Image (cartoon, rainbow, N blue to C red; front, top):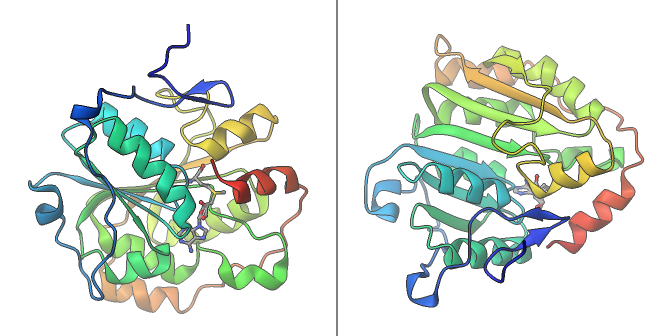
Length: 255
Ligand SMILES: C[S@@+](CC[C@H](N)C(=O)[O-])C[C@H]1O[C@@H](n2cnc3c(N)ncnc32)[C@H](O)[C@@H]1O
């Protein structure tokens, strides 16, 4: 039974409830310093395991994890200010003191703003595949990005990645095992069978197959060797088969 303090998108409740205003917090980091790495203990006012959500969109996956794990801190970024505005409003209204959102591109964030081994988990849900191959250079998952994720993860750290694009997944399943032990997770996540993220929900509702991976950091590779290795691996120049244009239009409109 819908109530005023529960919000929905595509018929699926957004995690958490809107609290009375006196319990709201501020989850926006308005401006990142010019230089990293960030001092996450200072940002959150405590030392706690850190989860990063890169390209977080409207923040649904971050809210879900932060509500389920109050003992874990969550820092989520997206390059698009409008989606971060939606995410911060929801984080604020849910009183989530273990969440921060910032506008930043994930390549710069991963390479310059996170110290070696600072993150327990990195999550990446549905990075844009850029169907037009002339835009292939904008694809986020590259050898260098994989090496950066490897570097910022603590030993044993987890990279959670998913896409509804079979061509992107084919590339990832070749690339990621160089840096991580990759285990595919074809079933919906038990914590959110309707979808962890906005894009997962709409893709599931359209009957698209979702490719999910749990990638555990290969601790036998040191960061310098990971960077060297990255230089030898192919870039994501794959041809992406459509059509997922209606989903892409929805993404551009944000929520
Ligand atoms: C398809 S949406 C997925 C959003 C969300 N993770 C989800 O699953 O619903 C892709 C998101 O990545 C963001 N994005 C695209 N390129 C990015 C980049 N280089 N760095 C950070 N975010 C990026 C877009 O603004 C968009 O919000």
